[in-house]
Every structure is written in structure tokens, then in C-alpha cells.
Amino acid sequence: MFRSWQPYPFPALSHALARRPSRDTQGQDTKKNVRDRRMPDQSKTRVAVIGLGSMGSGMATSLLRAGFAVTGCDVSADSVARFVQSGGKGATTPKEAADGADIVVSVVVNAAQTETILFGENGVAETLPKGSVFVSSATMDPDVARRLAKQLEATGRHYLDAPISGGAQRAAQGELTILASGSAAAFAKARPALDAMAAKLYELGDAAGQGAAFKMINQLLAGVHIAAASEAIAFAAKQGLDIRKVYEVITASAGNSWMFENRMPHVLDGDYTPRSAVEIFVKDLGIIQDMARSAKFPVPVAAAALQMFLMTAAAGMGRDDDASVARMYARVTGAKLPGEPK
Image (cartoon, rainbow, N blue to C red; front, side, top):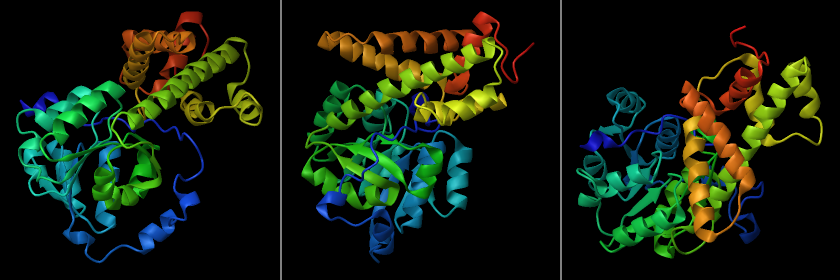
């Protein structure tokens, strides 16, 4: 059944890899100029967005704003209805959404869902026109990205390996970071849509898998930083420190990290509404372990972080915000955090 895939329920993990735009040194236009030079015939370009969660809906809206004809598809009828109300078209299956599309953007959680969207019952490969491009935004093992690309390209369609970073707000603003790799033809076909969705587009190679590999390095660092930040804030609470003052001091000191600054306010507010969920890092750090084992490369720090995310998920917080790792530390040690039971 088509419902074996699920929409991306949480914001993509918001971790910029670098601050310089990848194409500025080549004299390309800035993001503002990309918007200002919108081509009048962009409305003729048909884009399908599969997965209208917090990331996909923002990306679809950015494409609409740039003048594309956009069809949205999601297993949630409410999500599709909201997109239709915002001016897009709706579809009930990937097959329907991809019919006649020039570009399909897939914004789901993992490789298994991506493969189902491509080749499962009612998959896009059934109706996607020859010469069109499938843009895969899911975080996955690079070997899987290469396999999916080879399988789709054998049918005469293009595959762009294009993981994303930046969070739901940047998705809605068309200011994501996209880490992409693929053939020159795939880039050429997808570029108008990429420019509408991204502030920074990193072109990382001419074959699928490179984008996925770069994203996994980012996820290794992001997961370790969240676990370390959670450990630090819970340890501070156990010492009886004012953790709001700890936050103020650390964000002005050398021990700060982007993740500490971004995630620890959730702990301070006792608000674990998922912006990015614990289970996402269980998945991503698990992929890193598999990759490292295959390469016979030790990743002990990432392994320790994975265990903390696993413990947090096992305690029933898997779908909560990933800052919930701090709650796990607090519950194990008796530290007191805002919003937690006394």
C-alpha cells in the first residue's frame, strides 16, 4: 500500500555546514538576485513535492512563490488540503503527482520511504516523464543513494542526491542549504527549483552519493553536539546552577556550539514539542555506525551519542524534540529541569 511511507513529521535537522555560498566565487547571482530574475515562463515548469510535513510544505510554498506550477502529495489529506488552500494543486499518490512533472522533490524521512515513492505501488517512476528529474532530500546511506540513482537513471530519468539543512523556517523562506550531487543533466533540469528553495546550493560531485556522504558528516557532528549540550545543561542543573545564566554565559564563551545555542532554549522552557525528533538521530547516527563499520573506521564519540539517543527513545521520548536527551540525563541523575516532575 502507498501508505507504507510517511510524510516528514519534523523539521529537517538545522545544521549549516559552512557559511559561504558555494557558487559565489564563480560569480553567480545572490539569493536575492535569483528571486528578482524569476523567469516569466516558470509557471510552465511543473513540480511535484512528495511529503508535505513541516519541511516539505515550506519547500512547496517557496516553489509556488517563485512561480512554478506545484502539485503536493502527502498521506495526510489535511496537509494536502492546506497546500491547495495556499494555491497549489493536490494529489493522492506519488504516481498522480508525478504525472507530467518536470521535477519531483521527495521530502520524506529515509531511504526506505524514498524507494517506495520511486518504485513502489503508485510510485513516481510509473508516470514521471523521460528526461525529468527526481530530487531526493532524505538523509540516507550514500550506497543506497547510489543504488536508487542507478535504478532510476536506467529508465531514462535523472536522479539528484540532494539532502537538505536549515529547518522549517528557512524552508518556508526558500533559504535552505542543499548538499547536492548528480549528473550535469540532473543539475540542469533541477536548478530552477533548487534556486527557489535554497540560499546555498553546494554542488558536491557528478554522481549520487556524495551529497548523502556530506550530510552524514554533518549529522555526526550535529548528534554529538546535541548530546554534549544536553549533558552539560543537565550537569549544570545537578550542580544547582541557574541554567538560564549558564546558557547566557556559555553562548558568550568558547564552549558554545550552534546546537547548544539552538536546542537548549527548549530545555530552559521545558518545551519538547518536536522541531527535530530524537528518532531522527537514532536513525542518522545508526547509519553513521554502519558506514564506519564498513570502512573499519572508529567513531567512539558518535557511538556514545547514539546510545544517549537510544536511551531517550527507549524511555518513551522518541518522537519528542531531540533536546529531550537532557531530560534523560536529568531523570537518571535526579537533576531538576524546567517542566519536569519534581
